[in-house]
Image 1: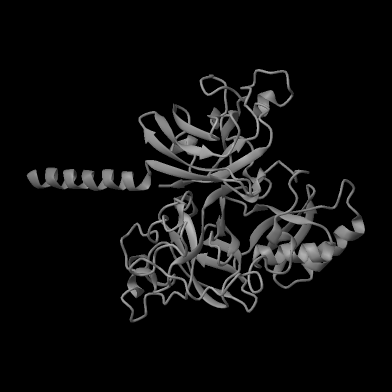
Image 2: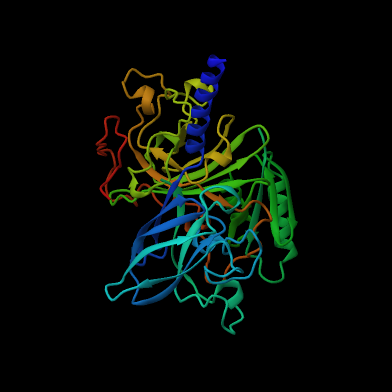
Length: 175
Length: 279
């Protein structure tokens, strides 16, 4: 009996260790501009319980708000355009990160300051580093305009937030 | 040889010229290594055992039109754009992965290499924050020694994909089958091409059992999710154009493009496992 208990506990340790190994808890994105613009940054994603902490900095845009989304694929072979649409596994309309109706990839806007820096530090409850909302191997895309969160009259508002072209992107990799 | 399915988008214009489409299909279908080529849903669908870059070149040459690979494989597929950030050389390539029932297929084209063999490995991390020096060791979930892709899982790293061969122009084109790696475990990790040949764990160097004495990675990229055939509804974006290494039949990088010869790469790690250049 004691032997069995010991065996079970050892097996339990091995299983949990494997789970940690198989489900990486941290990820990183190196953002860059395929068009050669001087826009770059590193952003880390840390899986917490029921949410992901997104943290990092980006350099290179004038002061203002810019759309910041997880896109469906991480295919950057044709620049940021080949990363597909916003990551939207639940087929919802585009929205604000705090909306009920939003794409999983809708992370809202990031703000750049007078020194062309954006310090990023927020948490999101929908993206994840495992499971159906897993963003590993997908892309983070920084857009050229502000995301209107699906609230304007523009025809693209409910699809993309009318955030315009894609300035920089990078593949979300295991850290 | 296990064939792959390719969805090639050709810039035939709004009303495709039948003669050009037929000519392209006939050329492809006449190739021994092409099982089938058809025009479907506005794209050329090719089932082939050829590397995708070879097929793309054939389509571009025969049709005289621009073309891009829109989808690859009919199940889960992945793609990594590998590049070096070195100022002294420029290695660039695209490596695609698709899973079949029996094997993983790695299909790639890499330019700018020194002629000869170069190691190809999947690394455990997809961290490019310090270029190829931050991607970690070879992906090795079983803690095995380094080996050949033909070795059993206990005697190779899962990420050991052996060597690729660069021709005189510095271009390596390959289509590798691997029965150990699974596509799902690749996503978010990285793939790297090394400076030298991988001795497959058979050499006398102490690095042989670690990285095949293959030197530092000289080009790498994160393995990303990509669209399989007919999974990407978006067609060519007018603002986009064609990726450079898809539209040319000469290497994007290589002899004449390199600023200086890249023989003097200095690896700082014990087995030259660090980056090829300062980042």
